[in-house]
Length: 79
Image 1 (cartoon, rainbow, N blue to C red):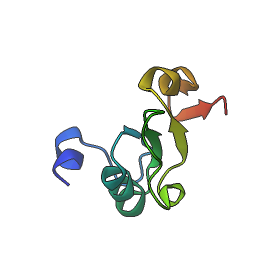
Image 2 (cartoon, rainbow, N blue to C red):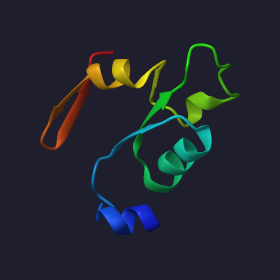
Image 3 (cartoon, rainbow, N blue to C red):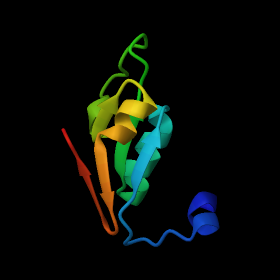
Image 4 (spheres, rainbow, N blue to C red):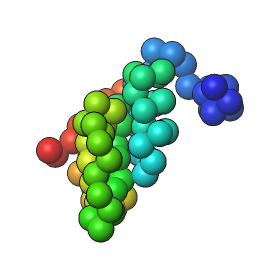
């Protein structure tokens, strides 16, 4: 909640959340309903049931960001 207050993100705002820890993705998905992008290095095993909290999975942040096209109010993935 601190982050939400600090950034001024509203409850109805669409957010694309890039993260490398499953715990933070869980909160983003369950509590706020954000779209989640899991950055998981290829050398790391996939956590159990990660699909429940992850909308997109990439092995590095560069690939993740490059795959999205951002427009005001909208975001599209090439996947």
